[in-house]
Image (cartoon, rainbow, N blue to C red; front, side):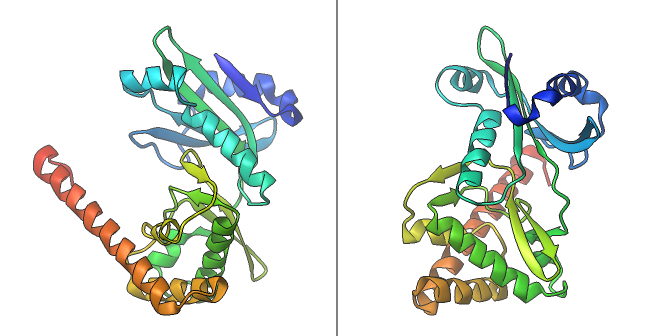
Amino acid sequence: MNFHLDRSFESLRNGILDTISNFNSFEPAFGTGKRNSIKKIEISGKNFVVKSFKTPILINQIIYKYFRKSKARRSFEYATKLSELAIKTPRPIAYIEYFSMFGIQKSFYISEFVEYDLTFRELVHQPDYPENEAIIKEFTKFTYELHEKGVLFLDHSPGNTLILNRNGFYEFYLVDLNRMQFGALSFEDRMKNFSRLTPKKEMIELMSETYAKLSGEKVETIFENMWFYTQRFQENFLRKKELKKRFLGKK
């Protein structure tokens, strides 16, 4: 086992180890998917989010032991990097990795729990959500700031940014951090980064107008590119969904 804990939380060491040992006894707070399980768990009187990454296939077990950092470790290190860049994310507490002689078996990432009001998903599904347009504009500004700081959040999807309403001022916290890149971003990188957020043209129009004002690019250029990559993502998504339904019987 490899256990890396933020020094500020050394007093939680035993509590975290006990939590991980009994992880299956806690109810999932945010659902259990094919790849991971995420639970809100109280440790020493404070709430934390514990994310369990499932055992990968054999080849990836070997890769994550010898050639590439585990998803849990990347989540912790990327959260630390974001904090250094003054980008909000739930504070990273620890990551734990379990290995066999062949490779990684399980890994866990622990972060502080952030009480939030909504995610971008609500804005997509509830067009009458209070201050919908204002939040979309602020979210676009937040994304532009990520790009300017050289952060490419590869899982920039509707549920992966927590939105907090601070008396009409909005704060954004990134979650699900194990896929990120850092460095100078091309125009194409920036436009593609919006592709997974919404299939709604009117939302893309609003985001392109806001991004154009911030970047100095023409609105038409921004919109054409954002909409192109959004449509391409949606087409690929629907194609994969149809293939799964046809060959695997999945809906």
